[in-house]
Image 1 (tube, chains in turn brown, yellow):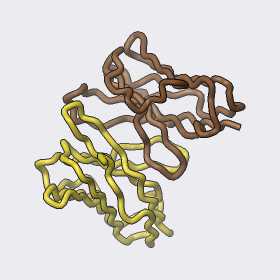
Image 2: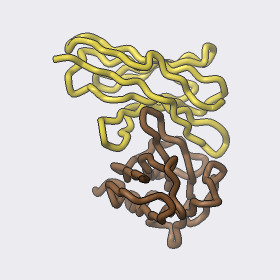
Image 3: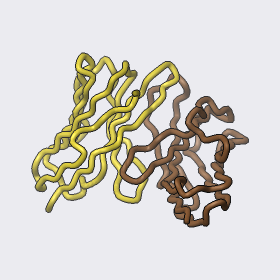
Image 4: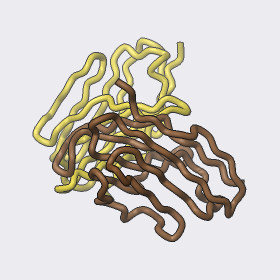
Amino acid sequence: EAGVVQSPRYKIIEKKQPVAFWCNPISGHNTLYWYRQNLGQGPELLIRYENEEAVDDSQLPKDRFSAERLKGVDSTLKIQPAELGDSAVYLCASSALGLAGFGELFFGEGSRLTVL
Amino acid sequence: SQQGEEDPQALSIQEGENATMNCSYKTSINNLQWYRQNSGRGLVHLILIRSNEREKHSGRLRVTLDTSKKSSSLLITASRAADTASYFCAINTGANSKLTFGKGITLSVRP
């Protein structure tokens, strides 16, 4: 069974440029998460989807970040325009259980963003 | 804060020794989970312990949970060089099962 797939693995951009990350969760997993991980820190939740619905986006900086999961499967996270402080690893995760579930999260390898 | 706090921040041991890592939290939880992250990789789930459980084992891993003290510990027995990684505790809280990660513990196992 394929795991969570993310692309690109690495991205280097100039500040003020746009960038997009893509995630394909494990087949059948309805719940999808985007986390941001700064160097030496734990992952911080940006947004959580249950199927197509964003059920928790309270930590997403909505002035420059956007996300979508149109068909309830794969998802895209966009930053426009990027700032120096956005340099981080963007992790996608999925799980099989919904809002009332207690399940484990399966993570992708992450997309490392460097903003110059 | 709903974040778990791990202790110590860094741990260095000799291969074959046991490694004990601790996590404390401040709120009621549904469960507590431990994850491992190798350098430059994604996180991998290790073990989940529910709020009504006190101890759980998985291979060389032993997790305990004390809800009265709001703390958990992860014990890795007979450590190996391959156990070198960062370890995170994550607490699952609320009716919507929000999972919040701590800052992590860096474990180095010397061959």
